[in-house]
Image 1: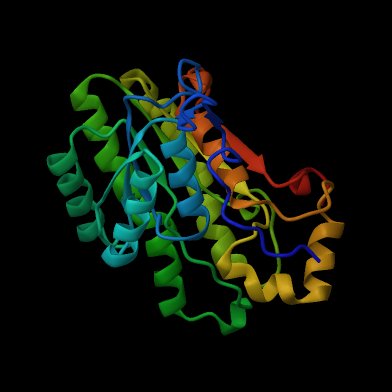
Image 2: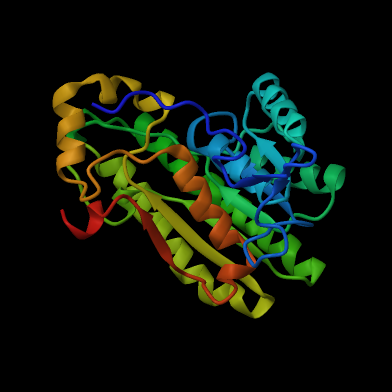
Length: 283
């Protein structure tokens, strides 16, 4: 069974080390994959996939604005990025509510300046049979996984269009944006809806120079999945149906987001990028 992996070091996450100064410098600098000079808002950035995305974006040279509801954790995360040589700030707000998302985005732009890239990562899981699912569950999942991202996309699109420089939006979906699975109908419905939103808005936002894409992770080694990874039968089932035979590392999701946010993906919009070890093409 895969064991816990340490948080990737600077060099492991794509930094080059100058042998003269022993100082980390972004290895992507000067390449189409560089995010230098860009300001990126990442929601759900305090832990798990969101934190890995924030690290990868910082490593690519961007000014990262980390967002979640927990200001104290965000402050620690931002300090970690600054200690590694990055530029990071925080914007604590509830991305699951219309008022929280709209006010939070506005406050971030007023405090830190124009947002070039939005990463909609905040989300919530739900594994329940339909017969056990309540309307309270429905509201919680849809508000967090669809309503909040939709409001933030509206805010970002208006803001980017007004700035006149275009921009990029990366939504974080799931393998269940593509597949169906028992006891995950509500979660899958929310992620399928976000996929549909991504495809439809690609056409609507293109005239403003705004690209919108989605990363669809498979099973990822995060703190939230500790119990599942410790379950030998579950772990073996995941590895068996994943052609690469293992779970993803969080930094592997971060790399995909950097690509879609960067100029290397300048002709890509409306795309669902599965980062799942081949699961969705083999199940």
